[in-house]
Image 1 (cartoon, rainbow, N blue to C red):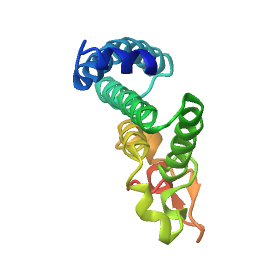
Image 2 (cartoon, helix red, strand yellow):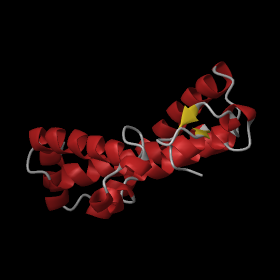
Image 3 (cartoon, rainbow, N blue to C red):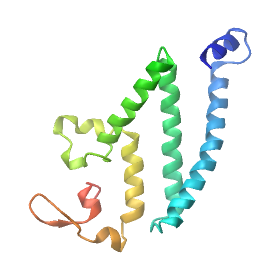
Image 4 (cartoon, rainbow, N blue to C red):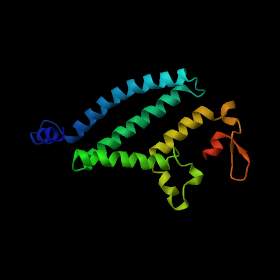
Length: 160
């Protein structure tokens, strides 16, 4: 699609901002539909306790941020192969520092600042708080700290 884009820009068919806005709107419509279906199935199928609207907004915004990140990487990468290598690497690193694989309290001190750059940190936190804050399931002390103290799931993940 890149060669077509360059040719049409050179021919004056449209401006780069117009192209990116049309792509963003196109992706946004598709993401709205797929996010809604996914959230309906997950929320009601798994009997999640949190607010459905907050789950949907969190999931939709995470999806759209992923789309924006993919466009940004594709724009700066010299080839499709390079973009296909860079994007999963970035997302995996942000998954580690976003609280999905490494609990916030376990992130090394020198790297803790990097967790704030991960958009996954915010969506994961919003979904965790939506599901567990103030609910019986989230208040059960099912985890233990290093000192042996019981802690709930939000304390374990460093969100309380």
